[in-house]
Length: 171
Image (tube, rainbow, N blue to C red; front, side):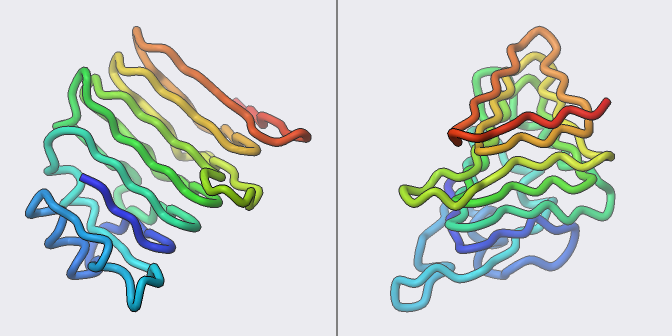
């Protein structure tokens, strides 16, 4: 499954109707979030992602923002050998939200477009990543970690793109 708007918000309730129904159907079309070929902003409901089986990829031309009331995207149906991937042209903001898989890989990649936008991966104080044995990969100009990253028996990989960059780790 591929989701690809301009900015994407992952929210607890509501969500853009076209995105919600596309996730539920297991198919997604670029035309669901564009007008005359220009990508639009969108949001997808947390529950639609949590009920998805298999590989799940979210791509936004600009930012991906997590805005969850319960502060956890529980991807219990993404198992070993499967991947939850988020790619943003600029930033990925987890704020105080966590992502958990049932052994599946977690891949968060910021600043993925041809024109560098200075993209960062930001995990706020209450945020975290837990793969229960899957690998966790983080990439961008800056990786701001103020929360736990737990791969269990899996590996954690961090890749920085900029010529002047940093990893900010606050326990």
